[in-house]
Image 1 (tube, rainbow, N blue to C red):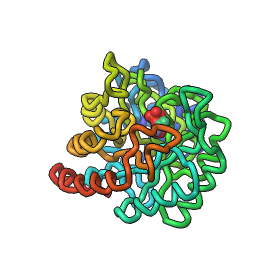
Image 2: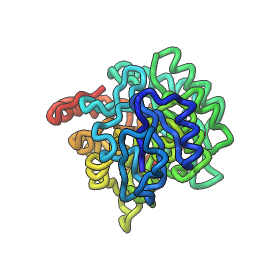
Image 3: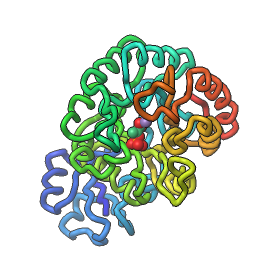
Image 4: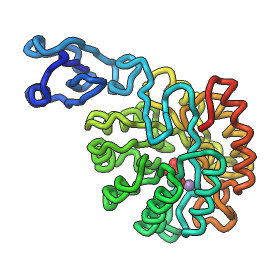
Amino acid sequence: MILQLKPGTSEQLAHELAERFSAFCVFDGGHFLLVTSSSQHQANPETEPYVERIQTFTDDMQLSSRRWQKQTREVIVGNSHFGNGKSTVVMAGPCSVESEQQIREISGLLVAQGLGTLRAGAFKPRTSPYTFQGMGKKGLELLMKMKQEFGLNIITEVRDSTHIDEVIEVADIVQIGAKAMYDQGILRRCGKSNRAVMIKRGFGSTLQELVQAAEFVMSAGNLRVLLCERGIRTFETKTRFTLDLCGVAWLKENCNLPVILDPSHAMGYAYGVPDLTRACTAMGVDGLLIEVHPDPAKALSDASQQLTPQQFRDLVASLQPIAQAVGRKIS
Ligand code: PEP
Ligand code: MN
């Protein structure tokens, strides 16, 4: 249940009321809100003098529900607008930062395409401890350097809570990966930051679990959340995962957070990524996450799915008319 406090309620009073009624206190759109479990359907009568709107829910998708706020929550990061209904923001880069030369080449490629957001992992959540685990802090330093040199926004992932403050410092968008989606330490810490946060759907997670992960961040005070569909695990093994576009349609209809699609991790093979990216663009989503590497065959992680620079250029050129057909612009 969400109780919207009357205009002019002081921060101190809002916090006192939250304490008294065991609620989260969130400042949203110029109002203080008290947020409790969706199992609560009646407000304590003592709150009445302070409250101007009460909304009940059938499940714990509350702050992120269109029933609470119909309009998509726009997340602005530098010049990029996620969720304004007019743009599809292409975020691209290698799976991992591997060297200065590698990340500089890709940064130059993005700028030449008129794109403003560089993706690359420094702390990689690998499925085996014996594979490349990412450059760690050195990788973050390189990303910071690219941000300063090229003016790019950086999206990079936090793998666990051992390095979360370092990532928050460098990232304009903090990526919470599919395997970290349930990590409450990461979700709560991101909720206390003012950085935009992109949560990737776990490959065995329901849509309800995904939006509830977002609610952890939002109820802690940070409403700048993006949701990313990156493929779920099904009985099919020919492709790496199965991209759940029905799920995306559901999110667009019911949830007020911007939606990002990641065709690279879903497909797992570069040959399918351009077609899939065009299909994603045609769905009218708020952003795309695409892996591109100067020499994919030599990539230290996710080698099979990364596009070459030329494949990436061709792909971006083909996206603009598709975006236009659904009333958007690639940016
Ligand atoms: C990634 O974006 O490189 C990544 C590891 O993604 P996911 O968490 O979706 O597997
Ligand atoms: Mn990857």
